[in-house]
Image (cartoon, rainbow, N blue to C red; front, top):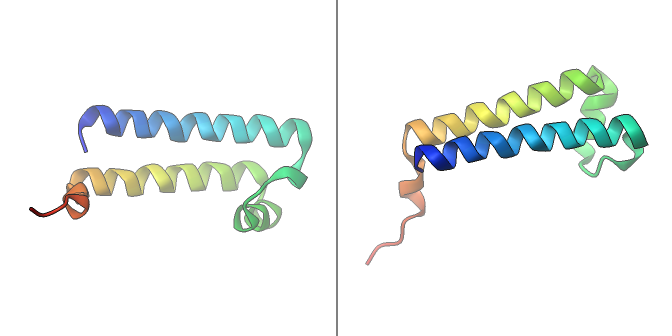
Length: 77
């Protein structure tokens, strides 16, 4: 993964978080499609769950970027 792709990945995570925040603030938790996220939002709170999941996704993406895990997906000749 190149640095540009990693920055794009972070951008996508942030925009997903913003759109989720806006959607749930305007329409409510009824429209959350992920049952695990819905359960966590009901249990821990909406904002806390959203921040924790986005930071976790960015952290795991950083680990894949740092250790060059994309070599796992390259095909052999």
